[in-house]
Image (cartoon, rainbow, N blue to C red; front, side):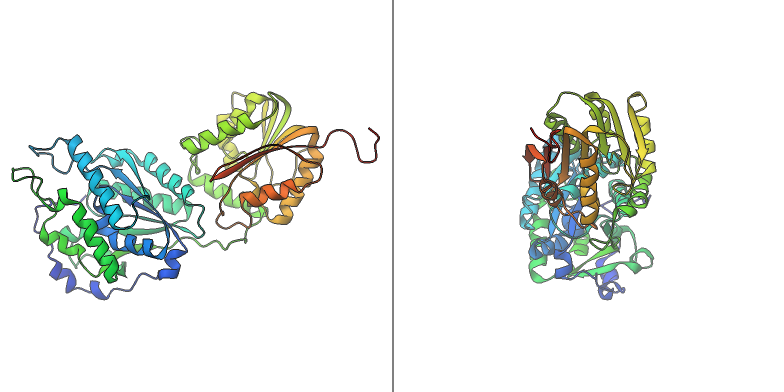
Amino acid sequence: MVTFSHTDQGTEEAAWEASGLPVAPELPLGPDERAALRFVVLAAHPDDETLGAGGLLASLQATGAAVEVLLCTAGEGSHPDSPTHTPEELAAVRIREFSEAMAALGLQDRWHFLGLPDKGLGMHADTIAAAIRDAGRRLRGNPGSLVLVAPYRADGHADHDALGAVSAEVARQDGHGLLEYPIWYWLWATPDHADWQDWLRFPLDATARAAKNQALQAHSSQVRPLSPAAGDEALLGEGFLGHFTRGYEMFAWTPPRETPAGSRRSTDAERVFDDVHGRSEDPWNYTSSWYERRKRALTLAALPAETYGSGLEVGCSIGTLTAELAGRCRNLLAVDASGTALQLAARRLAGLPHVGLRQLVVPQAWPEGKFDLVVVSEVGYYLAADELSVLWDRIEASLEPGGTLLLCHWRHPVDGWELDGDTVHALARKRPGWKPAGLHRERDFVLETLVAPASIRPGERR
C-alpha cells in the first residue's frame, strides 16, 4: 500500500503534461460504441466519480448510453478533526453535494447509495459485488455488453483499491468490460512509473469539460474549506485539482468478452454454466438479492394448487427455488445442465429426501415419468427457437391432464442468446389446449401459469 497524504505536494501536473500522457492512444469507444453499451459506475466516496470519470459520464449521458452510478460511502471520514461538523452532518452534506454533481452530469435519477462505511470498503466485498450485479440486472432492458467503471485497483487509497479489486473480479467472473480511473495515483506516482504506459486517453469535448467542472464545484466541502477553523481545510488543493482539468481522462481498459447474439444453443449450456458456477457459488445473487427473493415468493404464490404430487423444475441452478418448491410437492425432481450447480444445490437440499437432482441438458434429454407441476424459471431464453418448441413438446407429453406449467422469465434482452422472456411466454401461449390460469407482469419479469388439457383425448366423446 502506498503511503501518502492529501497535504503532500506530490507530482505536479506539468510533469505529467511533459510525459507521453497527452498523446497516449485513445480509448477505442466512439459515440456509437458507447451508446451500444451499458455502464455501471462505482465511486468509493462522493467526488471520486467526478474527478476520475466526470467527463466520461457527461459524454455517456449525451450519447444516450444506459448508465447507473453506485456510490458506496458518504465520505463521512473526510474531515476527522472538524470542529464544526460531526461525521453524520458531513455525510448529509456530501450526499447532497453528490446529488448536485449527478445533476450537473445529467444523471440525477440514475444513482444509488449503498450506505457502506467510509474507510471500510475492504470488509464489504460481497455486498459490493451483489450491488454491481443487481445494477447490471436493472440495466438489462438495454442492449449491449456491460462495462464497469471503477477506481484503479492500485490507486493507493484503501477504499479505492478495495472497490477497484471487487469490480475487477466481478468483471473477470462475468465477462464484463472494465474501465479503471486513477485519482490519487496522479499525486504519489511519477511519469517513471510503468502503470500508466498501457492506459488509454478519453478526449473531452467542451460540453463534457464544462459539465465536469460544474460537478466538481458541487463538491464544495472538498474543494473549499468547511470553515476558517483548523480541521476544516479544503482537502483537494489547487495543485491536485490541476490533474482533473485536462482535456482528457485516462483509463485502464479491459474489453468485455464478446458473445455474438444468437450464437449459443442448449448444447453449450453445460460448459457455459459450469464455468459460471465454478467462479461463484451464487453467480446471480439468488440468496442475497431482494429482487430474487421477492420473485420466488411471487412464484410460490402463483401456484394454483396448495400441493402437488410430483413436480419437475427445469434449470434449478443452485437450488434456491427448489428448496421452496419442495414445501409444495410430495415429490420433486430438479434438473440442470451444470454439474457444478447441482453440487451446490445438493448441499442446500441435503435435508429434503423427497427432492431428487439430475444433470440433464434439455430438451435433448428428458426425465421419465409424469408430473402435475412443471416449473420453467429463467431458462427458456437459453434455448434456440426450435429447441424451445421441442421443450414444449416434452412438457406437454409429461404433464398430467390438468397439470400446471409455471413460467417465469426476465423481460429484457439476454446477452448472447436468441430469445427473450416475453418471446418465450408468447410461444408457450400458442400451444393448443393450454389454458391460461394466471399472469403477472412487471417491468423486469413476467410470471405466468398455464394448465394442460384435461383428460379428454382428441376424438373421445364427452
